Image 1 (cartoon, rainbow, N blue to C red):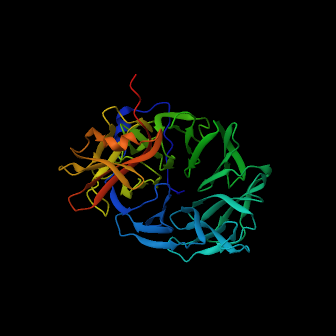
Image 2 (image 1 turned 135 degrees about the vertical axis):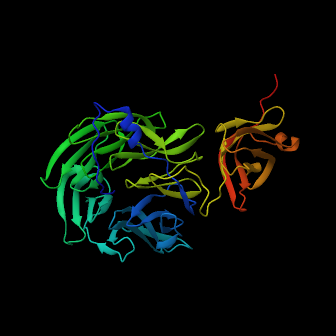
Length: 450
């Protein structure tokens, strides 16, 4: 979470010309580093962007070289991590194992999460909480908000705010004698808690008056962020949709203000603007909207979009292959610099497919982004590590095609009723870096002729 000055934009009367003028220009992203784990997090801490990947917490200034900030071994695991302008905080769990008497058998025990914090570049000190678990946390400047539970299931829960600069045990914001641990977000004097499930209620507290200021109810699944004037941004998920309704509420207007956008990631609010991921054709893109709903894309399309972070000026996101960062406002987006491939590929097709009577399997190939030379490469169909079929393709930037992969007759004759397979696409960019995409799916044998 971040602390930034933000001005509330009234939802009643806004001139269109003013909205266009205040809409952020498109970011000029730089590929910061390759990243293999698309489910990992992102956080700005001080002048650096941090992200988790391959058992490490990485750090880099925007556009700079990546370095290892923290390394986790076989027995220790990085949990949640958060950054602010002055601090970095994270949790770590440790697994200890001993022989249980059997041949090669071990009995392992995982410790309760340990909490650490310090300046963005360290050193980091352990913070004793005395709780069985720290289920959620957030940072705003030197203020660390934690949700500390007496047990991993329902039970006594406390929300504690610590001033890391002043030290000390911290102060209790609110406690619950018997509850599921809530989510927490903090910005300046404001703390937002996400409570319950049916419905989910977001409660905003003022640390100065030590009182509840407003609350808003949502459907069971909602993710909330808060900025330093008490305005929250929310992404409200409701099945069976794969996207979330985007909106905001504030101290002055404490009711949900739905925006005409659907998010596929969490929403991050700073400086009166909300950053989020959204669908764009066959892919995804990052966008920034003001509180009146005027949005603009700040990335080119990618096949997959993971986490997003935003501090009012800097913005970052991760795909299934890379971490990107940029600043607003700057030039037209592109993937022209950095260590990641300039080519961005995607694959499409149904999750349950069938071999046709002509022994072919069709997959959609998408060239989301590339230099003017486009995307040129190979699509393969694999079962395990065995290549069943392959086909070359060449596409202009932004183009897509359907590739027919033809299996051998002997392969089709012994095909089971249903088998797990995967399609892969790969291509080289002008610098010789390989871009790839992969989709697993189930493939059934051809239907019998009647």
